[in-house]
Image (tube, rainbow, N blue to C red; front, side, top):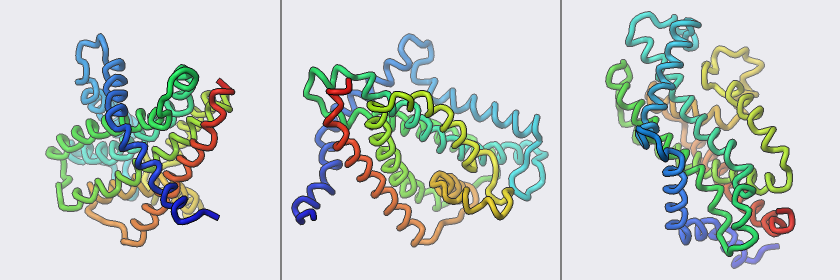
Length: 280
């Protein structure tokens, strides 16, 4: 049984590590962004252009080709209705893309920096956080695009938008916890690199990114709601588009689960980190 001092150390350890190495984390993120857009003509402008292109493509595919509609609403006909429909899809997509960044980079990030494990005294726990911060940057750029196009749609900017950071903070903690788990397991199970793309694709269609929860048969809805991504996507849409807010108990449960995943991920990483040098 943990003593009070040990328990407090367990609670403070991940926060202390992230804060103590914050400057190194910022430098690694800057290096990653610089390397990603190095030698490109538009540079960081791609972080704004890509979400814009993504919005246009999905608006054309789902609005013009498939003639999709949202839930029980009629198919959009006017330009403003089509833009509104596209923005609804876009909200789910930018939430999912942040998770996809985490899933695609985390399993191999320790393997790609094996020299840090073998030769250098390095805070390895900050490596999996780098793609999460990069994903947060791209989410922010995508959100800027959303705000710009909101001014041309029926969507109103209300005080509910102020609650968005309260949703993104626990989502950030969840992603960090997932990244710690995946990167530590990825060192021992190399097949994860092959499994993750299939899992990511499946998760996209098992989450309400391109459809409303209401269109599913009632028997399948509890399974969809068991997906934590469903709550995040639906809540963000409710706050930004439909001016609705979940009850306080739902927020409390979400924060609790996010903290549990955050601490479990850190404990898993610390436990498995001891064998990294032997495996690599």
